[in-house]
Length: 373
Picture 1 (cartoon, helix red, strand yellow):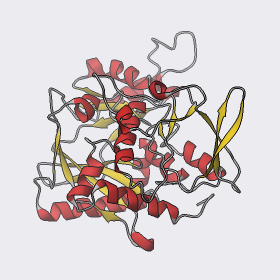
Picture 2 (cartoon, helix red, strand yellow):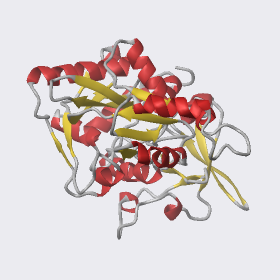
Picture 3 (spheres, one colour):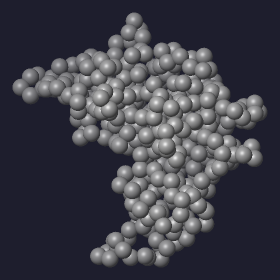
Picture 4 (cartoon, one colour):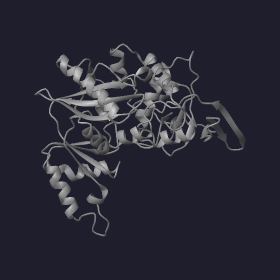
């Protein structure tokens, strides 16, 4: 499954194309299901080429849609099937689905909503369950859980809708006591800060704010994607990422060799442009940090995975400061799978190329019980 209703629709499509090309067709019968931005489910062509950037245009499920390809999920744990529906034609069953790869990012795909639907349908699926998906999507509660486990997180302020724009005819311009408190709390973080949607990803809606004069505009930009916003203190140093897989046969999670993000182009930080559209963005694998720091990053990545009760796979992002401290930034419970994504690159550097990586993810999911985990 790919696409989805979130602002990360195109990233999901790119990742699905990369995965489709890597799956072993001697072992797996693949059914590509795209979710359009309006929520329709589409039986998509099994063609990775249609899920690539072409002529500077990002791929979309809508571009692959054709008459007679809409799909309805059969919410019957006894059949776990998908049905193709077309006007004037009887429903056509695609047969029983053994496992679902929900390669979706952001709201309505990575936040527990789809995971709950799949559990209602009695379908096995890869990745985190309902709770871990929801907690991993909401950066406020993610950080609260990390802190409760004693993991090192940076300073941040949550901007809630009720505090930023209270109801009333003058709410657009009024500086209420609640809004002033939020602004004062943010000022105590120091400058610059990073403003982002609390439940977003791929750096969409994220802004680096160098001074107070640009803060409110950045918050409004983030609020276009989520009514709840996170403002984080800048952490000096380099960005380091680490990929995690659920352990084999109930064992502890496994962490990859970490990577340093080398931001390309003219981007001030690792934004959407740098992640997916800049040819000179790269990963240094392993990162240029001491061996004991690499070991600690891997340990903390597994600890973060366990703190949220994650399953299947995740990517954990850190900062490594000039004085040798490691700061946990966030976890991504369904990391990007594009050819430029860190998750598959880190596992390939660890000795697990994408076809074998996907096989392990699928086999782990097949070992789960259907329904409530």
